[in-house]
Image (cartoon, rainbow, N blue to C red):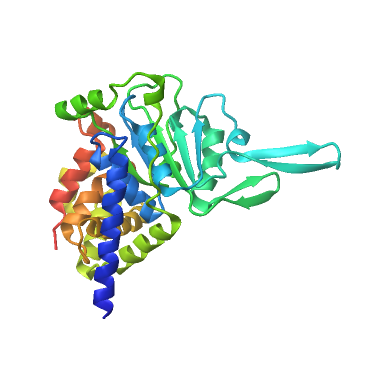
Amino acid sequence: MGENNGDTRLGRCLGFLNTARQELARRIVGQEEMIDGLLMALIAGGHILLEGVPGLAKTLAIKSMADITGLAFKRIQFTPDLLPADLTGTLVWEQSSGTFSVRRGPVFANVILADEINRAPAKVQSALLEAMEERQVTIGEKSYSLPDPFFVLATQNPIEHEGTYALPEAELDRFLLKLLIRYPSHEEEIRVLHFSAPISRERQALKPLKVVLSAEVLEEFRAAADAVRIDERITKYIVSVVAATRPVSGDAAIKEGVYRYISFGASPRASIALHRCSRIAALFAGRSFVSPEDVKAVTLPVLRHRIVLSYEAEADGLDPDGVISRILAFVPVP
């Protein structure tokens, strides 16, 4: 009986997932990897960092994702002159009452688009750290809880470095996934042109999307993901993959081929993220159990922003994805 209920819940979730993809396809052409990554983070309750050159629909995808959830959405354009109070809010003196009142900032929303997050200085980044991890902000001497659910979906441009600041490692580790947005294929770009053909003002407005992933539906997804079985051997495999990114704890076989390229490895937060995302990947595939392929499918977006490469990696032309792929080749699959 319990198994039948589980199958029914899995079927409902897959139905919601397909509907969500169809709704997003009304605005976004292609970019299936980005869309599935956004949906995965939404279900897992994690934050996402999207990296790609301008014009690849990063902002539109995030806005559309907020539309199909029906959650409160705020867009914050990060600039070098941004102050922490512009993000979190501030205390305002009320002349009539002779007291300070709290004016809450745009971070008090369910879905936050942090556009060009790497343009903000360290003070703003530190204010965002508390919001992302503790789900609260401190204004004056008091802390205020943020709405539940709360997601930060941040974008950054990888090719422009003037007027930007490198994100601190502590903040990067708080992102569940880092998604690299690719150029569309030839056929997809032709569809984009047809998609954007109308130029009259009446036709330029975004098509309204149906609310598919309400808070209740997201809870059902999470319950279904929690019910996905993960064998102890898969759990040990996940820990082995993450541990293999740490030069201090690796074995000799991996050391020769990988460790000269890594300065610092991933924290246990990466193991938690890989464990969660593997179960959601299995759910997306319509299965009630996790396979090693599910783990491999999410390893790159989970780990690529959590390892710090050495100068030798740069000299040899290796990026984080290349190093992680080597690790996956070395670690035995159960």
